[in-house]
Length: 282
Image 1 (cartoon, rainbow, N blue to C red):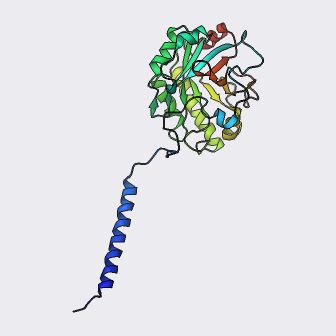
Image 2: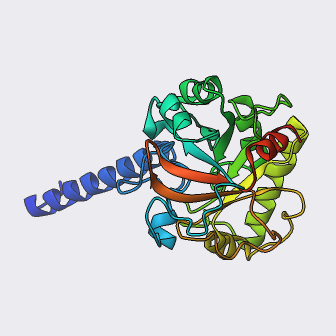
Image 3: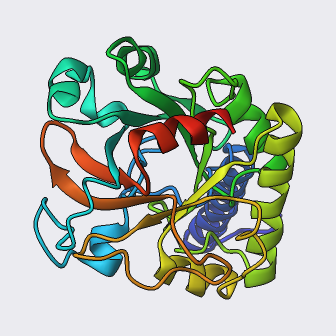
């Protein structure tokens, strides 16, 4: 009968335990649910993004809340944009301050809807504002067409009633990961096109594109192909809207500050109140 030295038996036992632990760890890793791209302990919670979230960090701010130095208030119409982080909005105060239009975040990706959407969207309408909805794009999670469908199905539709503005594709820096969502420039253009085409098919109206020139240049290669069909909402916190992305010779809307009265984000429609109504019904 062979006699195994006690030290050898101990070594063999430790080896078996090590193999068992390694196999257990591998099985746990394989069975764990996959996280959404970009999630991690230092990233914001999915769904918390909002229009202009990355502007200050990437482009900065040249001036204060009364940014436009060439005061065009006679020919431009003041408005605001809101999301869930602003909660229930004081619409009568904003109306009294001269705001005549508003956009509310409706959705993000294909996984989030704004819990304050009803108060924000209907509240602005009830005070007399012309209002619309926007979608925060996450091109790293699902396709453009799928996100357009989700947007339309969750408040992003359009009707020719003179009080509803066309839906907005908010395409800007990724707050959850890589700035361009892991897309190549051509891949990003394709994603945007898929969203815009599906939105037009679903609603009969061309969506507005909200973006910043620097992001558009970095992530689409300054693609010029949407300027003829889709209105531009430019983001720039400075005295002027600055250089526009290729394809557009003028902006339709301009987000000029994140520190305005009552809600922070304030905007200008590039036209009079009557032209704003025309834009809503076009």
